[in-house]
Image 1: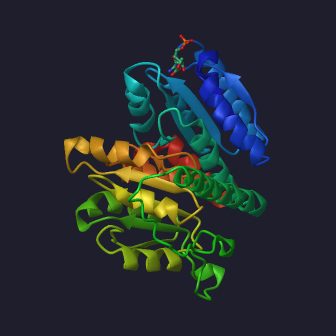
Image 2: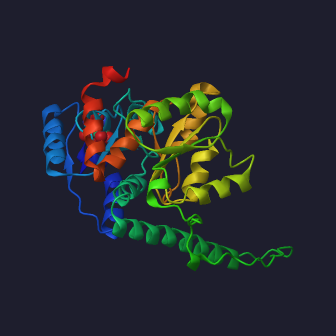
Length: 336
Ligand code: C2R
């Protein structure tokens, strides 16, 4: 269910519709504003949740309270798409991402309706293999487009000193992502892989794992930076090929989330850490991903919301977990 704060957001919503059409995912779209039509938003969210809508997408500019208000009224995952109306969309980005516990909004880049829909598809793909396969196909399409664009561009370079090196390209028919090398049974595979980029991110990572524990969600955790230890990072991604989703936690230029999403088609939740500039550098570098590789970013240092979001995503196909998330969201004081 897609909600736009105003019909003027349709240009951005259209990007989402195009992706959902390509992925053959049924959707509905409405205009409803948290500020102007408060009751309408609430009614759409409550009724849609009861009817079994799996993911919400809230698209809004300015002080974008719409996605947050959706998150306040459902235990289903909410994806937020901030729209650039003023100040480059930063107002909407902050309003969408900086949600208090336990009402996370998986915020994607400014104006990135396409990534909002793709993230929603990845979430649905956790329990729907057909959707997962179609998401894979779409990612492959992005890969092939880069190849075509490069070929065209390079064909037009006419410099005298242009000396192209012949490089053998990887065979993408084998797939873009690491496949599991282990023979673990389903029960041995954790549901979530938590990846802090450094030990200095541990305090925030522990908030996430504490709530995963409380909700009975199995996880693995490994501190590993793709910039400092690229080889080890790839090995770890291979070992984690069968998890259902990733939580990546990182400060500064926050390459961890980008590296994870490059190597996986599963949903990636990003938690920016406040090492410098109050975490603004990490938030912007995590959230503003190019089309095709979404990172659902939660608020700076909000490990707890990353875990709630993970539980909401996993709860779509798991009644017991769904009930735990419902309880948590209606009695958040128990979880402090
Ligand atoms: P108008 O063009 O209708 O004046 O709207 C809309 O999403 C839009 O981007 C201008 C911008 O205001 C936003 N808006 C919100 C909310 N309602 C409308 N952020 C809300 O409820 O959060």
